[in-house]
Length: 491
Ligand SMILES: *Cc1c(COP(=O)(O)O)cnc(C)c1O
Image (cartoon, helix red, strand yellow):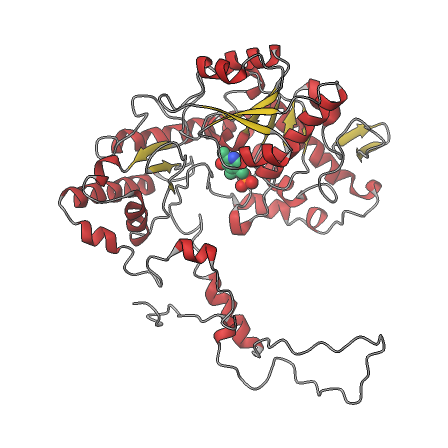
């Protein structure tokens, strides 16, 4: 069924591959006898495809219908919290007073918007127990950078600029070591393999005397879906050695309303508004990654934070807080996302947010308990948090791998879970159902997973290798696509 339109699914060529029609969308005559006034050479024609407006509209609309999204179906992508985006958020973000303002307007004319940001700072400060909040980072990874730059600035201004080591467990999300490297830090890995967690013993060994340690970066709950039970003890030792604890907050959906990260020793944490607080994600973005810090680091946060003065709300400048490491982004951050996130928080309230994390954890444990017979669950003896980890260990003996399982889910109308991450677990499948999926959807997923396990046991290996069978494209050479992308037929 490939390379051909079928039913109402179109096989859509690239723009460059359209048969060139002899015109374009506009029929202005070519201007005659024009000379370039600036004396530059005229730009040669670069061979854009000549398409008319209706052709272009169809092209992009057809592509847009090939997307899969959380509004289509089950999307249990671990470490991503693909939860429903309440439509109320969208309605509020579209109010003209929020949607039609400009960052260069005088502050006196946007007091309501600044108050909204101030309130969001306070909500995030309350939920994390870290009351210094800067909303400006544009994604989780950007928040990590902001957090480590805050730590670096604090060390530098306190005569500790020689501290060059960041401790990070081997199960960390790739952005953690990448951020540390971008900040000029050296990485020292804390091994977690046997338990999936940072143990006090392994931590102590990595810390050493701690004199050169700037901080540690740990995700809690971690990427194996487990709560780090010894992390508070580790944080105490780290603080005693003069380091700061950066918590990657991408997994906050398991804790929100239940646990304040400051209480297990966190000094800095980023929040992915597009994960925990239901603002759109991926293609629907943009992302937003505010950071929250403890009192000891407030002075070094990037500018601007929103402050309340006698004259009203105000975006700080570097003159207001010269100890800041500076500005990270043009203007104030993703304002539309602030509106959505605060709408989400206020519509859930304190009790609602607590229920969010309880239900998210319940959904993941339901899946774990239903599937741990059919699939190897490396930490299946423990309660998981908002995502559960399975592997292909049992299926691999029959030649069926995590990739085959993911492709078979696609064939069954389900977006695959996160695969082969965390890297420390062979053939990992990280499943995050979130709290917004119905029991029917979750049961549907469990049924498909059980069927795959059964088909594997029944020796239907060839069939599983052949999936997906009815998608416009089947198995792609992903390595080649990444290494040698052909983006234009003209290359
Ligand atoms: C999603 C995620 C990030 C990065 O967040 P982005 O908003 O995608 O930049 C970092 N760490 C973990 C554990 C994540 O799941």
